[in-house]
Length: 50
Image 1 (tube, helix red, strand yellow):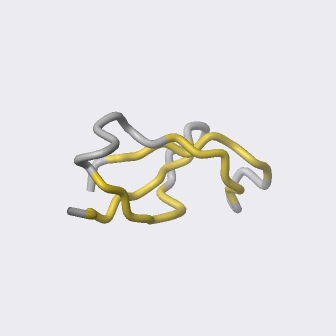
Image 2: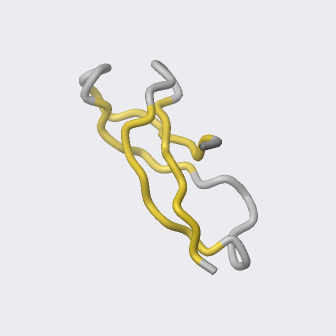
Image 3: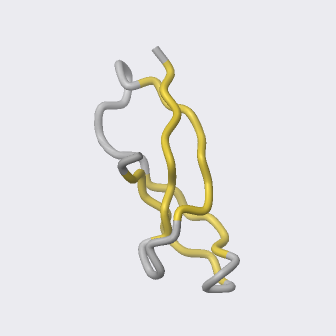
């Protein structure tokens, strides 16, 4: 049931990371604080469409 998702920076909207999540357990969009190499700082990265 795990599916690959892409995480994009909220400030520059670039897709920097990809990970997996179980859609059965977590239906809402995933949001993590990660480092963006284009913004050069830690920002919120949200799940984006493929």
